Length: 61
Image 1: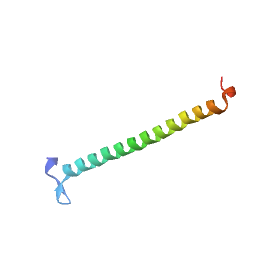
Image 2: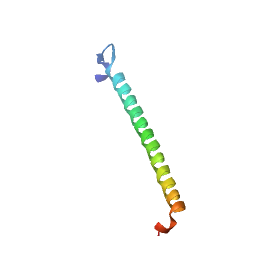
Image 3: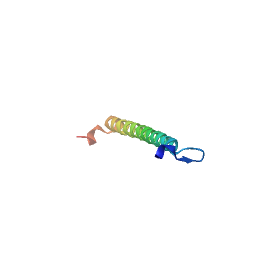
Image 4: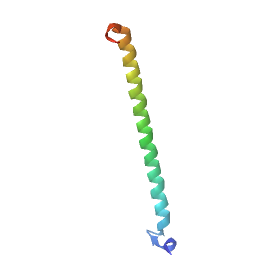
């Protein structure tokens, strides 16, 4: 019944598939951005801890 409805010259179900694909791509982009942020943050923390241990070992327990 709903598979035959048309909007803008195409079947509505096709538009929904496009919307789902765009949603999935958006999720992938957000996940990639978060992963890059997490790697940069982790690298900063590790470098800072290493730098502090080298310079001021007496302040660390």
